Structures are given as structure tokens and as C-alpha cells.
Image 1 (cartoon, helix red, strand yellow):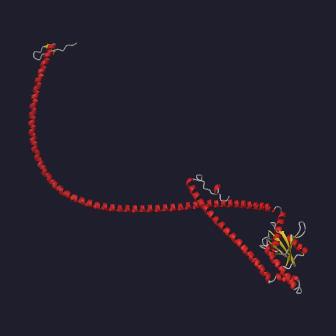
Image 2 (tube, one colour; image 1 turned 135 degrees about the horizontal axis):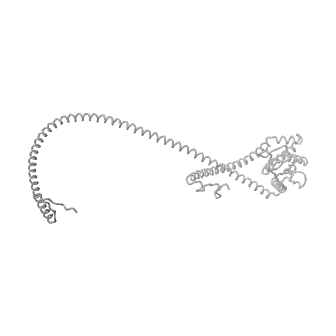
Length: 417
């Protein structure tokens, strides 16, 4: 280790430093440092005091200069303010005028823009009104179109319902007609039995009517199996004189045959009868009521009493005329005169009037019943139409399977059964 040598500044001797010397030196250095520090502090305080004084002086001087400068600046400032205020006033006046002009221009522009805005707003309102009107028109047109389509659909449904109703009604009428025919056929079979029994019953009834109506006449039935008419009426006057004969043929069938006329005319000639009468259930197609056809009188069972009364009266009068005027001509000529005379014509008219009154009464009753049926049918159609409207409304709201409102498919309300 190298030892540092210390040279004494006074004598120039060099010596090796030891701890004692080091401590002494350090103590001396400390003392010197304190002294130097004190000196430095004193010098610093002196310099600081001197500087403070100088600063105070300079500050006073600066304050004076600043006050002078302030006064000068204030004067200059006041002068400049006065100039600037006048200039500013003129500038502000110009600015105000310019601003007023600008404001006026802006106001005009604002008013113009406001006017344009109002115009555009009015145009928009008009367009909105036109658009709303157009929408309303379209809605009305669409509603009318939908109502027309709905009406068409309802008309189609109504027509379908009417067709179904007509078909069902026709089916029911056909069934009723068939049942009626079947019932009539069964009734006819039950009441009449066989065709032979039917004829016999009508023959007996005809004979009973003739016996009851004309008790002085002779009613002779033709025996079963004997060729000829069913019965022969010998007309007698109150004195018991035979005045003439009327031959009868009774028919109770659904069709009229022209062969009956020829057969009865042959029977009339063979039996020596004066008049031939066919009492039939069905008249010929060209006859609506009783009358004469090919020399034979034809009538229904209900007309036989009236017709025979007239014919019998004619035979009696012809017989009386014949007896009273035997020498005045041929009997047939007299009969022809009587039958073409006014008396026979008037009696025949009386019979026809009675018959027409009966027919008119029956026709009136039929018309009244048909009117009643038509009224009920219209009422039924109204009910069905109202039910169809209700059903369409309910199906449009709740669906077709929600509620069953069909009157014709439900057996409890089927009016046609």
C-alpha cells in the first residue's frame, strides 16, 4: 500500500500523515470551515442588505418612472381612447347600419324562406290530403271490390243453396209423389181388390143410385158372364107406362178406350135402348167434363145423377109428345126437335152452370191452398236466406267448422221430411 506524503507549506518538510495529525488537520479544517462559513454568511448578509437597499432604491425609482409612465400612458390612452371611441362609434354606427341592412336582408331572406316553407308545407299538406283522398278512394274501391266479390260469393253460395234446396225439394217431391202413387195404388188395391171386384162394386153402386133416384123405373142388371152392358134402365112415367130405355156401361180404369163406345152402341142396338151412357173414372183426353161422343153420353160417377135426370126427362117428354102427336111425324124427328129445342138447351145450360159452379169452387179452393203453399214457401225461402247470411258471417269470423248452422243437413230442422 502506498503512503501519501504531506509537504508542510511553511518549512517544506514532508511527513507521513498519521491519525493524530489527520484529526488535528480535520479539526483545524472544521474551524477554518466554520470561520469561512461565518465570513461567507456575514458577507452574504451584507451583500443581501446592500442589494435590498439597492433594490429598494431601484424599486422607488422604478415606481416613480412607472407612475410617470402610467400618467403618460394614461394620457396617451385617454387620447387614443377618445380617438378610438369616436372611430369606434363611427365604425359601430357603420357596423350597425351594415348589420341593420344585413338583418333586413336576412329578414327578407328569412321571410322568403318562411314563405317558401309555408308554401312547401301547404304543398305537403295538399299532397298529404290528395294522398289521403287517394288512399280513401282506393280503400273505398277495394271495399266495393271486396263487397262485390263477397256478394258474388254469397250469390254463388245462395244459388248453390237454392239449387241444393231445389234438388232436395225435387227429390222430396219425387219421393212424396212416389209415396203418394204407391199409397194410392195400395189404397186402390186395398179398397177395390181385383179389377173384377172394382167393376162389380161400381156397378152395384150405380144400380143403387138409379134405384134411389128413380124409384118408378125398372133397373135391370145384366148377369155376370152375359155379353152386354152392365145394367138397363127402363124409364116409366107415373102411370107405369114404359117410355124408353137407357143402357149403362160402368168403367173404373185409369185409361179410357175408344172401343167401349162401339161396344156399347152395339149393345144399345141389340137391347133396343134409346140412349147409351158410359160411367167412367177417366174421361177421354179431348173431354174435360161430361158430354156426348159418337152418339154415346160419357160422364164421371159424380155426374151420372145429373146427366141421367136430364136424359130421363127428355125420354119422358118425347114419349108424351109421341103419344099426343102420334100422327105428326116420325119419333126420331120429334126427338131430334126436342134435343135441339130451347127447353133441352136451357136444362142442359142449368146442368152446365151447376157443374161450372162446382168446378170454380174446387178451383178456388185449390188456388187458395196453392197461394197458402206459395206464401209458406216464400217464408221458408226468407228463413233459409237469413240463415245463409248468418252462416256466412259466422263462418267468416269463426271458420266453417266452428258452428254448424246448416238447416237442411240437421234432421231435427229438416222441414222437408
